[in-house]
View (spheres, rainbow over the protein chains, first blue to last red):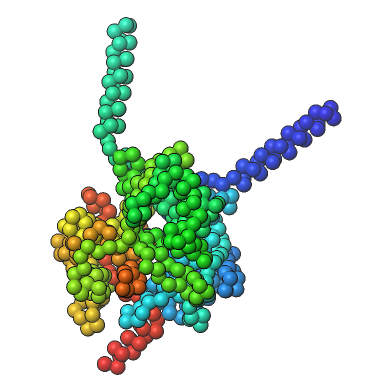
Length: 167
Length: 361
């Protein structure tokens, strides 16, 4: 009887462990998932460059507890704090383009998805010489929420020093 | 019974033969949305692998099929896993690796089904970010485009062949280095958003499928190829055909105080695709293509950088930049641009200064 109980307990724990492993396994991403995540990263640029919707176009690409971290900037967490960042962009308006992204690699993960994307911040304006303000890449964690895919965490990695830090 | 069996066998054989014939005859397979996205991811990974030399160069080599090859401008192809991994470790320019692991900015990726898999083209410009301890970044004088062949293997899509073709203009029309001519449509006149406002349309926006997004993105990328190269064969047909027959294109003045730019109809637009520069000419780099469903079909915005890749006597520079605002419609020929407006990049300070100057007049 004791042996049977032991066997049942072992069986249950193995079952539970198997369940955990199943839960942690990354679910495949559908084509629309990949496209929505790509669009999310692109919306980030528009939101930050334009400061649209009082900064909420930018903050809404994050989860409510989403965070932005980087070597040269303090941790910014939560949509209100993130919206403030987009509002404070000095050059921002509906005609300003600055955050050019490329090479977006997306992988399924246990949380949803992770991604890496190149960034080049270019100051380009009519009648003025253009310059690259900063560049590097982002490392992202994406999660699927009831409102669609959102950035849970964006880490600005390997960014060089900005050309004009006061900008 | 026997004759029935014979008929069945014959029918199966004929069907199999017909299938084989169809397979043979169909030279270009249909690509699914998953195929397109997998190939896009392959190309995005290329930049990361090349710039970081990850996994001792193996991350780069693993992007190629077993018999895959990379062909540089010299024509001396690198083949085989070990040779490609060595290339991935060292990089192309004197063993240089970017300081921050970021250099290859790949844009305008166009994918087409082809016999044996797919082919593709993508623009590339190399940027020196934080090199030599300098702040910001500098353009390198390396840029051009890739011409690719992709093959689907048991491990997914891989490069069968990637050839790098440096930027080259076969013919520079005098004066085309200015924004006015080189960026032709985008560089021209002030767009009134109202002028290009789409006609009233059904009020409800239909959801877009993955294939819709892929097809619309291809329009923006083909726009660059069509405009820069004048393809096919200088006719401007690639450029013209991304627009609907009655499409409109509006942009800001090419020169301060110049006339506004307004082009209507495919034939008028075709003239902008300047022939004679050749297929190695790259200038319009597009990225950040945002697409949303709309009552007309879809609307989109896309960033543009007009980059003059450096030549012997001139470093790489940005001629101009800005963004397009588009309306797309699904026609019998597929998705097309119904209207396109170009807006030059202007900072808040410039916009405020312009408004103040206007008020003072």
